[in-house]
Length: 85
Image (cartoon, rainbow, N blue to C red; front, top):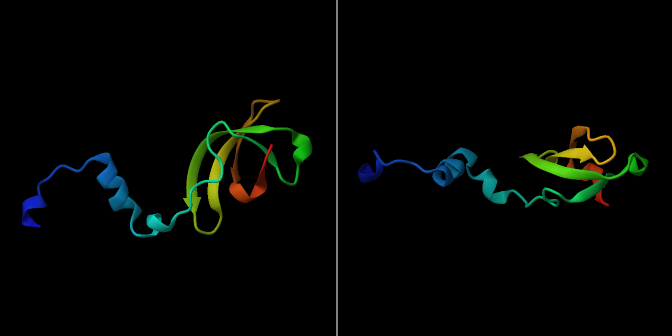
């Protein structure tokens, strides 16, 4: 262990250190960037494109930034509010 005290950490090592144990139990996102989705309760708003996967929380699941294909306006939305288009 003393041999490693002055080693340089790469991004992958830092991500694992910052994420802790819980990150190992994080499910994969249901959608990927560029997937087309609808708002489950408001399909009349038209299709959206997943433009970013922003974060994961154990309470709400994955959060995405979605962009309305008609207006071009982005908004944040949790996975449970979305259905495939």
